[in-house]
Length: 253
Length: 293
Image 1 (cartoon, rainbow over the protein chains, first blue to last red):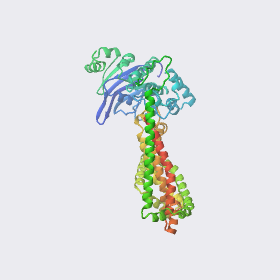
Image 2: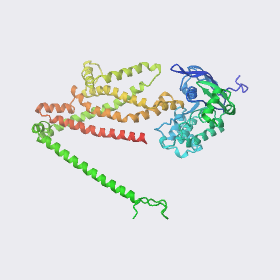
Image 3: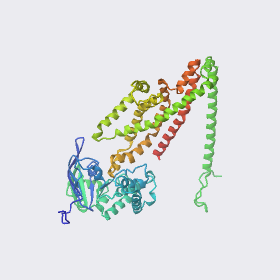
Image 4: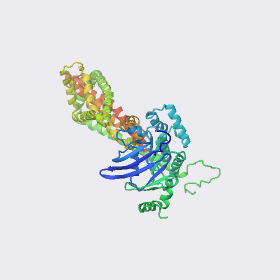
């Protein structure tokens, strides 16, 4: 039955997801599928539910209705072990969230060593490889507060990559950065796309969305109002609300 | 001629080496002079103040009697060996109680972070413990344990008074220290926990490797503060009988109706707590600097 002829499933399948905080609905029946190697950008105003959706996928929030499947497994099943689910997903946060009392190297190797039971030597070798690949080889022994914001965010991305996740979630990862430092982080994200990483990004960087997204989703008041290719969303949005939003963020030009 | 300061930097051959300008040198001269003046004013005023206070005290009509009762040299040297001997017992009580308090406090604080339903009874017990023992005066706990426990005549209950004192202090201070640890754990931003959990670490791993190291660092100054207070509260154990410093001083005072032995005990306690207090200040200042950095 499970032969190669089986129809290919989507890596991530979100169906009818609702989320409420204090009786206020933040997500209102979101449907979204993400294919392997696909890059999906979530755009929309602050409070439209982008971050909440990512946190639901990573089980940092529990959904109030609907299902999320990862690789065919229902991760919103109440019997699913969240720790096992999160081992397959990497997440990068707006405020980096590096562990301040640990060196860069320890930040990166902690999860491989403790959650994935990789030997220290092996974990450190992989961490050093990643640091070298992203131009941070000389920062391995530094503490996070000695790094610039851009460097911290690059370390956070490496930390998420170190466990070889199936899927990476980016929660407005450039929003806290000095404009001059945004570029170095975007460069990494582009490189990850080229290497075939599956990613879902909540972002305010329309340039990035346009550049790398295979699919752009516009969220408005907890509803996934419109999705399409970057080309379609940015040049001929179907919805009036999308058009208004893009006009606001891109300037009237 | 011209006293306009910075010389034009383009002096040929000067390169990037920096020669202090005339204005900067003048500035530093002025600063040195005013620093010197502040120093001498402070010294002068302190000397005048001390002389006035000493003169005021010694010239007052009650002074001879005060000196006799509190500062009797003979009484001092007479009581010192016994009180010092007792004081070693205080230190022993303190050294036994402190590690136990840390363990109890940390365990209780950790139990309160467990949210799985299985742990409900443990969690309630931890809450009950902190509520009860923070509410009870330490001396009452010492009475209850020191007199109450042996009265039970149960097997295995220690009868050594110092040990009973240690148990009482651990019960009482454990509750305070648990709250200090808990506030430290709560002060670590939830995003740190989210980051740890998002990497696949379990609750326990996130606590052990990410939250606790930050929490403990933050609560070191308040913890030391509690220990300064524990050092002197070892004297409360005197009430149930062991011959520690306060008890020895009491015995000597009862002999002579002279209060100098109390002063001996007081001095010893102060000598012990001052270094601890300075260390606390130092650590607090250091963590302040780190946050600023």
